[in-house]
Amino acid sequence: MWEKDYLYTEGLSVGYKDVPLIRDITLGLKKGEILTLIGPNGAGKTTILKSLIRQLAPLGGAVFLDGRKTSTISGKEWSRKLSVVLTDRVRTELMTCEDVVATGRYPYTGRFGVLSKEDRRIVREAMELVHIAELSDRDFMQTSDGQKQRVMLARAICQEPELLVLDEPTSFLDMRYKLEFLSILQQMSRTRNLSVILSLHELDLAGRISDKVACVRGDRIDRFGTPEEIFSEGYISKLYRMTVGSYDERTGNLELEPVKGEPEVFVLSGSGSGTEVYRRLQREGIPFAAGILWENDLDYPSAKALAAEVVSVKAFCRIREKDVECARALIDRCRQVICTINVSDTGDFFRELTGLLEYAKKQGK
Figure (cartoon, rainbow, N blue to C red):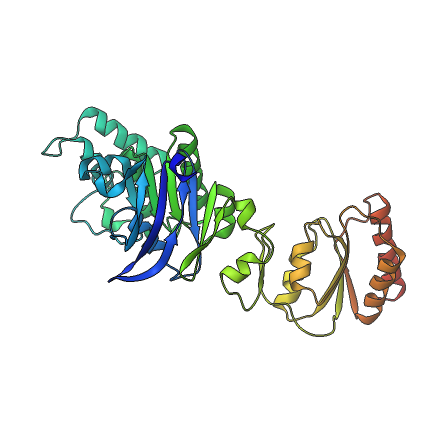
C-alpha cells in the first residue's frame, strides 16, 4: 500500500550517534494530505522530522519520495521539492523580513541569486498570504517570535515545494494566528496539492487539520491512522501518561482534577449551560454534583470530569423515575442548588428538570 503514497518509509530507524531512538517507523502520505506527529515532549518527533528531511542520517531503513529513495535525490532537486520550517532560531544580519522570505526563491535563481520580477511577485504573494506584507521593510531580528514564525512560513511557501515539513509551527502564535496559519496549510493542501508533515502539541487542532496522525510513544510509532481512528476514548491519556486531570477525545476538553469530597452543590444544567459553573466551583474548591444530563449533552464531558457525582441517561432516552429519585437524593445531600437551564424549554426531558427545580425550591435550596 505504501508504494502508492507520495512519501513513505520502510523499516526506518532514527536516533543519534548510532543509538536508535525510534525503530521500524512506518508512515505513508499521499499528495495533498496533511500528516501530524503527536506525542509527549522528548518522544522523538523532531528527530523523525529531521531524518525525513535528510538533516539526520537514518540508522536503518529508508525514506521514499515520489517513488525514489530520498538519499538518491540531488541537492538542487531536493530544495525544489521540499521546504522546511523548524523550531531552530534563525539569526540574520541586517536582513529585512522581505529579504528572509526571498531566500525561498534561491533554488530557482541563477548562480548569483538575483531575483526576477516573477520571483519578486511570488515573494509578495507569499507575504500577503500569511499577513506580513506590512513587515516587508522591518529588520527580521526586531520582530516578535510569532512574526518570525510567519515570515519563515512565507519563506517556505514562496519556495513552491511539493512537500512542506514543519516542527511545532504554532508554538509562538496567538489564537488568531494559529487558526490562520493552519487554515493556510489546509487551503494549500487542497488547492496546490501540497503534502504537509508537521508536529503539534495542540491536540484539538491536530484532530481538525490532519488527514493522518502518527503517535510517537516509547521507541515506536504506537498508532498511525485518521484522527477518528486515533482519538478513541482513553488513548490520549495513555499516550501522554496523564496522572492528573482528564482529556475527552470527542470534544477536545482538557479538565483539571475534580474536587474530592461529599458534594455541597447540585448543578441543574444542560445544553452547555453548566460547564462554566462546573469550572468555577472546581476553582473555588467546592465539590458538586450535576444532572440530569443526556450523555451526548454539551455539558456532559466536563460534568463527568469535574463533578463528584453525575446523574445521566443515555442519549435521547427518557428520564426514568429512578433517575429522578437519584437526583432528588443528591439535592437532599447538598446545601445549595444552582439552576442554569432555561425553564421555558419544552419537552418531557425539560419538564422533569423543571420538576427538580421546584423540588429544590420547596427544600429551600
